[in-house]
Amino acid sequence: MKLSSLLQHSLSKIYIALLLTALAVSTQAVAQATSFGYSAEAIEVNVYDRKLDKQIRLNTQLIAPAAPQPWQTVVLPSNCTGSDDQFWKLTVPVLIQKGYAVVLLDSFSPRGFSTVCANKFQMWQEARVADAIAVLKTLKSDARFDPQKIALGGHSNGAVTAFMSSFVEAAQVVKTDSLGYAAYFAVGAACDLSFKNPKLWAPLLLISGEKDDYTFPEPCQSEAVRLESAASPVKIKIIKGANHNMSTTGWFYSNQVQRMPKGIPRMYLRGRDDKGVLHLELDDGQKVTAPDMIKTYGGFLLSKTRGGTIGGNWDTFPEVSALIFEHLESAGFKSQLN
Image 1: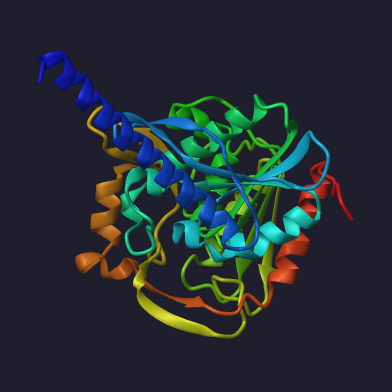
Image 2: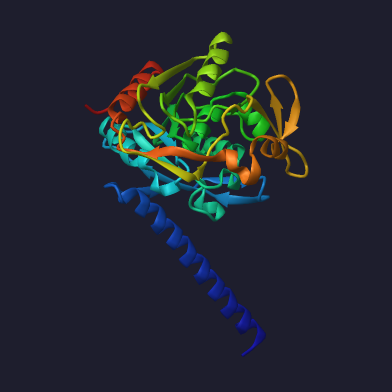
């Protein structure tokens, strides 16, 4: 066989392999949406990952409502379970019923893993913030979406993404486009890490479980006080008797999950240096690195970051969803279907 024929044959095989890979990813992404009763459309969103030093395509899925365009939209970054997010399964139906478009954001699978529940250090939040801003930039350029009515919200790890994205300073520190959503809500967020400048893009709703021992409510309460004192638009609601999954029954303790250690000081994200080391500032002004904090507060083999009460039947979700809709409406959103 001639060299040119060999080259053409090899390129054809590579092209077919890439095409099959793309189709597999697309099929997997649609399956995660149809698994709870809705068809989905992949939206192409590309983002530069500074840690990986390469451009990646996010796994971003649109579930369209029956309402007329342009749609008011809610973007939901997944919690630590990735595409198996129980909050997605509960929240998508109520949002679609109200006429909101829903965009599901999976930041994990494009980076080669499906969950970060047992190891949050696989992906720091600044990358998830950059992902959320990249999604917003894409939606704002698409005529199907109302560019003034796009909200960001989530549960647990996804809630942290929404919480941190709400800060105007986030774009500067993360080194991405300076864009903000029209509203933010964070259910069961860990609020220990934020940004020093308290200015927010838009109204932020924090919802915490009173009995949450996985992402403790106290840091969110103190952060809400700090933001309120700076006249930033924030509200916090504590769900009585609820754990991390907004449940009052059906809990169980797991030593496999990784959480923030209790009593860790408030931290402000300052960005990464040229070597990729994450830099933080403590509430007292002390400058530290993420490895410093892990060494000081993680305990032996990270023992102090392990364990929490999780699971449950999400029996307080009707209260949670009512708070979310109330928050969206107060931010200028309006249900498009009855």
